[in-house]
Image 1 (tube, one colour):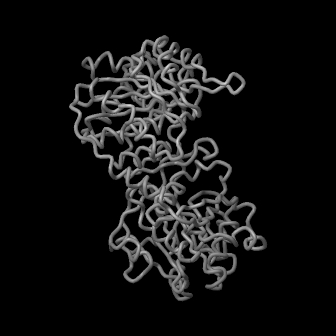
Image 2: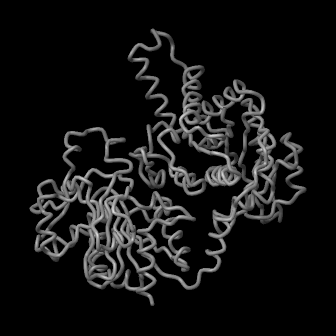
Image 3: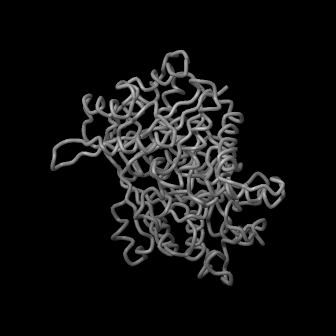
Length: 533
């Protein structure tokens, strides 16, 4: 039977609960245990798929096609495991399921309540994650902050879950802020004390407290927290801001976090293998020189909207021995008139995925500049569509070529709605989602990067290259370097004779890992390095 760890957060949001949870997952896996992870989100949206990235950051897509919280990306990158739709659920999805069952008559006319029905539904999803993964340890992060009313059902469910499990099979880790007050020249423990008091008032006693802060948290401060929060002093850990999130597992390991968890579970302390992570961090420290990459999007005021892209560029840079400086460029402000001034100093240009017409012409301008000036270009999802529209307009002689997403009556709809998407009205979870196969054309840049004929990438889109224009585009010189196995869908394109111009309908960023950077990102960064010389 799996052991369970619940991770809660206190004082403020955005503390790094996800990084803390993922770091512990990394350590336990490095000890030889099978780990899976889960994020429970308290908001009433069914999933983040229809939420603005300004609200939620990026939507992470799993192999099986679930639109999930961005923390799933952290989990996958840290534990190097493909997660599933069981790894993320919201309070809204729980209510949706319960209401559907009630309308179906499953409750025989009885009253449906938060307790026991909502909490039982939450517990069932926790059990399901354990059963379907076969994990030794399930780490479940409870979104939100202790004290928020919307988090109460999840914490209550976790409390009940611990009560129902054998003694010693469930642990609670509370991540809390220990702020530094500059005027007093000291860190303060009172917010943590109040946060734990609130958690205990709901019937949950933390087994570990992880103290977040930007200043040293001394042993005496941790002892004070331990005293007032009824936790052993050795179980209060410090987690100070680190230059790289990938250092956090090592810092927690230095404090014996993984050993203490294993001891409480009664698991043997298997030998730990941290060599891959340590090798990555040494390589990162040893990087010489840098390249500048422009990421042209429309949510640039919130870097988390492109989190996996930024991480994938970093992974590739380390493998190539070079730091990658990411410059977020607002596509709304970009045009042919200023492209030279904005992008002139860039060694590579990346146009990521997105939806909607806003900033699309700026993305086309970015693709045009990259094509004309020989700047390495990587297009992802909408970035492929922007590249195809630009090529159609300026090379294939199809003026005004665009997507029917933006102009249903376009004279040259080189991008069109997928046939299977016609008539779809619901927006949530209805796109082409998850991993799909792609056959790579030999002799192309894509083939050179992947080194394999058949690849799989995760997708999140409704529109595709219009097959009615494939011949015209190819006759004008565009190479279709990847298609679905049946040849029906264009999955990758590139421009021959260009130093490096490749675009993918899939989202390769979701599969990049610090110790296994994605081959397409590696090739792109290598091309940027070559351009810089």
